[in-house]
Image (cartoon, rainbow, N blue to C red; front, side, top):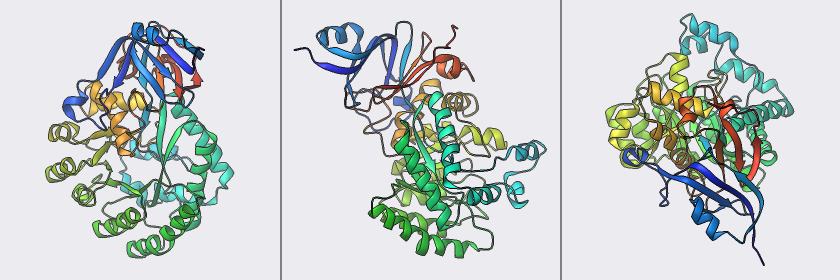
Length: 432
């Protein structure tokens, strides 16, 4: 009797595996030499996992007697791993389009913050919003990301700054995870800012003695899933000592450390993260040479966010120095009301132009290395047998078009597939 499998994607002009030997991350040399099969095919089983990737001829021969639920003829197209967005803030109410005008007029991030805007503006609106409103907004943003090729996304809380709202946000993230195909890595970010009316010390104690114990209780009861802990380690926000205490408490609960560091001022966040064996640190616009060396030695991933530096007119993070030092460089959109970008193809393009990364480096940073930053590289980030069948099919003869064509992903992405199921089909692709 013929076997039955879920999906065959056949005859693609290029299949970009990214990795082919089970690597959990890539550093500079590996990022520059991605695994690519010319004229390739991919097979995905009913369990949502990749069963085989290889040349079209070898796959045809190996699976000649197999019946597939779905066959996609990818002739003239390219197949890539689903993109992974390693840093977003997608749960909020109240947009901040008015602040964009302030920034264009010269106001800095901290000046907007001190004028009552920024995080505190969003906190006010998010606290007031019912969960249903927050979930509706989140699902719309995640759908935008999915259509731009993101199949796994990190989602932070952090616009509550009090127990009730932080739990509300984490529950909304949980609800989205249960009701949408896109993969989610959930992050508690209650230390995103110091709440109005509290000192940093008081906010730290509230997180340690009130918020984290309540979150741990819900996690233990299986009523809440949280994967990571985040702190905004910054001058005027949480200092190095408070950051260390909060991150260590989260680590003791089993959460991965994945935090904001060295963004506006050199805080020695990178050295702290390395000491705590952090999985990842984001931003790093002001990281020192010592911090870069510490991250490389500790295998702590640098999640670089080119949209933030671009929108806030900040110095760009030193991607080339990090790559040269052996740091595991990954990418995120930093999607939030302050940096409204849902598109990882645009993030990769900006990484190439503003951070001086090559296109292969940018793709590795948005796939296998972003998966590593979320502790998911055993199951995501490359097209290899036994990994989850998450992939993109683009209407172009070479994979680089996904990065090269700035802002054209809507005309390029033909299919987005998660666990072997087509979750977005776009019949409005256009020829080059």
